[in-house]
Amino acid sequence: MIDIDDYQRKAMKFRLPTANGTYALLNLAAEAGEIAGHYAKYKRGDFDQEEVLRRLRPEIGDMMYFLSEICNLYDWDLRKIMHENRIKLLNRLSRNQIRGDGDDR
Image 1 (tube, rainbow, N blue to C red):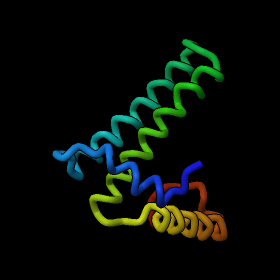
Image 2 (cartoon, rainbow, N blue to C red):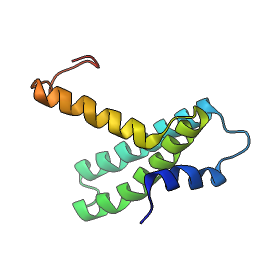
Image 3 (tube, one colour):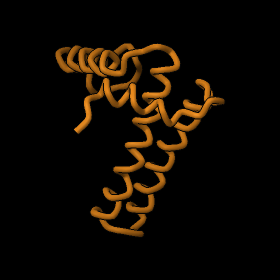
Image 4 (cartoon, rainbow, N blue to C red):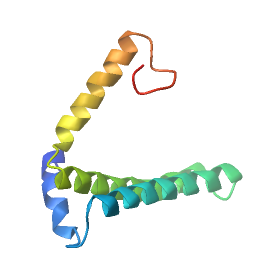
């Protein structure tokens, strides 16, 4: 297993010298699109649940790479972002606001 801090640090040895924030954000969106595409094909009946899960795992890994790249580009700590997100979700849960719309609910 790998620690999230270790991953964030070591993943950058694969970063292209010309990569920038725009490149990383667009690739993050592209990976999310691949996940959505695999799931859409599963819902259409092209393959079973086992196959869609097999296809999703590496795409989620690719998303983790681009999240790490974005964090490194802006000197953000991915572990801290994950912690802040958990606090936000716990706050929403405590106010019964998990469902709904908007960032500030």
